[in-house]
Amino acid sequence: MSAFPHLPLGQRIPASVHAVSCSLPTMRSVRGYEEKDPAIVSQLSSGYPRFVVHPFSRQLIAHYTATVPALAGRTLWLTSSEKMARALADQLGTAVQLFARDGLHGVSHPAADTDTAGRAKVYLQNIGGFLSSREAETHLVRLGLLSAPVAEETFAGDAGSEVRRHLRRALPGTTDTDLFLANSGMNAIWAAFRAAADLQASRGRTVWLQLGWLYLDTIAILKKFTAAPIDYVYLRNVFDLASIERIFLAHGSRIAGLVAEVPTNPLIQTPDLPALAALCRRHGVLLLVDPTIASAFNLDVLPHADIVMSSLTKYAASEGDILSGFVAVNPAAPDAAALRRGVAAAIDPLYSRDLACLAAQINRTDKVLAQIHANTAQVAAFLEKHPAVGEVYWALSPASRENYLRLARTPDAAGGMITFTLKKLGALENFYDRLRLPKGPSFGMTTTLICPFMYLAHYDLVTTPAGLAELAASNLDPDLLRLCVGTESAADIIAALAEALG
Image (cartoon, rainbow, N blue to C red; front, side, top):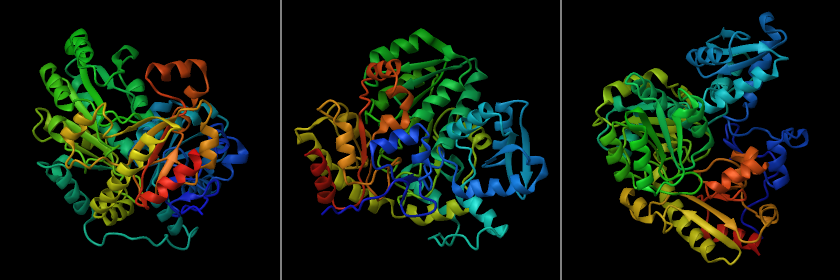
């Protein structure tokens, strides 16, 4: 008998109305979700909030489109702020109208205009611009459409000060003026990029370097919001410092910044960050570092970066029911004052109830991480020895173990992420469907989660010959599985994996 109960298609993970994940228990459901199959999508109660408009937001939108005459025959997108609504309107062009009512903001367009709808959704996904589910809930209660908000654990004092207190501990040397809280990790990344890009553009620097394969929306920001296509440069090999230095020499004083995940997602590769930082400093290049995969609570990256940006949805909001992020400007960076101003202008703050919930959870981060670290080492050792498993990647894999440990606060602080492949060609579907672990997007929560990452993040690539060639060039197996270990018993996690592997 498995220690993990079966989670039916669409069930929220965790069982909270604000959950950031949902169950996709079979490969058929994964494909159906990506292909918008009505038989699959109709069973999803919610999804990751930057990809699936939350039911509370949909209910609020339905209320306004039914009661505001000016919205008749129009599609409404509710945004996280007035600033975000204006940015979205500028992005979409003349077919849209700004919406403002009851303290809410958004953009509407003719309902038949599916092209504009698609562009609106992707823009808000890329830079973290959707209305918070808790803010939507607050307005539904105000309107009498819900009786009361869901009862939750919240912090009773100054939630912003409490969260920043914990961040200062993770980012020694910072003060509150260096720390900015965002409505999501992606909005934090967007604000950091925008601040750095605007500053460097004033100096004639417009080229941006992507180090290794990064999370899809970070890639999207670099591709879409650089000045021109030639200003986006992808450096495939995070370990090849000689090749990276040649790129610096080739582009000279036109390079604005380098964006690095430490470690990368999904190959969990850690570059030589001190060497990269020295290279960037020599060339006047801003270094933006995202430690989300292993957590800023595990890695001391700020001394090497101009800006650190990260999701707090992962590990800090360990229940898995809060979207949040932060930006930290290195106070020792030469451009610190200008970067602070730029981040403050670009960021969308965290909604007050999300902040109160985050403040209640963040004080458990050390305890949660300690259990995750102990479990991760055991699960990784099991996978590395199993005859059905091919490649295994985690923070302490040999390829970049030394680079990682140079930054780790303790030798066992590896985070919870493990990615792996199966040796047998075509084994993914059978393994995934048999596996009795929670299956869905996101990571960094008390609940163990596994997903066929490339299918969820890059379905367009795994389903086309050109896309498969692109993945192969970056050493990415389309059937790569991403497992983030939770706080359950390591023995139970391993038993579930062993059963499915056969």
